Image (cartoon, rainbow, N blue to C red; front, side):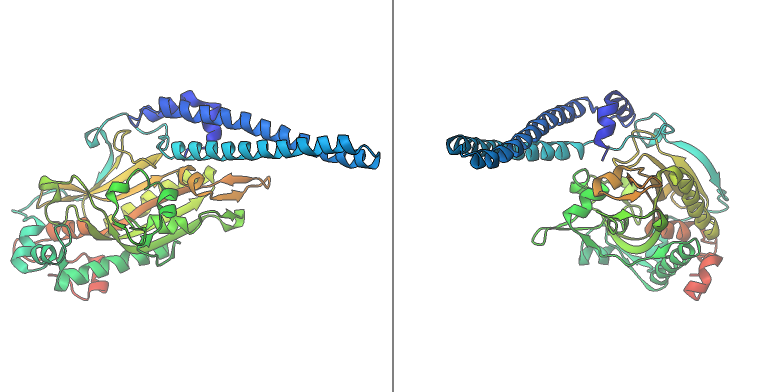
Length: 422
């Protein structure tokens, strides 16, 4: 949530920056500032009311002591009127607070100055690429490989649940488990503390990290219990620190977690959803950092290096792209996507997004720390996929296949799988 002070001080800048995300914020900003002005006027009236009540209370005692009972009774009546008026003002004040909060959450985060202009993924900027992109024979897409070798059963998954919920068999099931353990171990080596999180969260958690109300239609909702299945472990991890005032010595906070992730992916269709390309349930290891504002962009660089290092260790060709204004998420200030190249499909598959949210999430969840002056200050939050499994699995199956029909397990995973080929 954009801090209200930012809107008060420079509303024109907020409107201008959000246009980079192709979001016209003018009407919402003006509405928030109108509520804020009325709230401050109401607060002044309430403060004046309390001050008059205090003054009259002192007078009543004095009047009784002086034997001026009638005057004292008149003052008591006036106090009663002021209390009634104060209650009305308190109700109005709460209403203005609610209106401000409900409108503020509709504004996306302001993009960083380095976010390029653009409307769609086609306008994203490639920063670099790494690996062997050559095709030495006719590589098969992973769905053909899996059907031939009975490795992933999409039909049974559909029978059990529906489309987008595959069943993994034998060595591919073990490959998934190996990837999870590899990613968690690498995160631990990099200084992240592992946590195991719930797979369902309440609405407060969804609002705090920005999934609600923006992505409500994309989240699975358990109606009777009013809980949401998590779209990523970022949500419960970051919410560990909701409504917390941390010490400087607590920072930086680094967490990693494995979880299943659930996304409705409403509107997905066509070739982009074939096989493992887009699922409703998938596994992912997430890394999250909570840091001082001054360090967050260096931390973002460190997280990018970590994610790129994982893909290199798997030996998969990949590229890193900087997302443009039209493709960046509601909550992010700056995002870099990592995409592996699946040779069977001849297609780029996103396997990680690494983002800096600056103080946007921290403001929504009231996450602060005491700075060197002892004053509470909002922190910065960052997160990244390290990594998302289904597309990594798809890329390993496609890129590591041999002309003889085997799939070579990346060397970094062999100690985890117990086998070197499928």
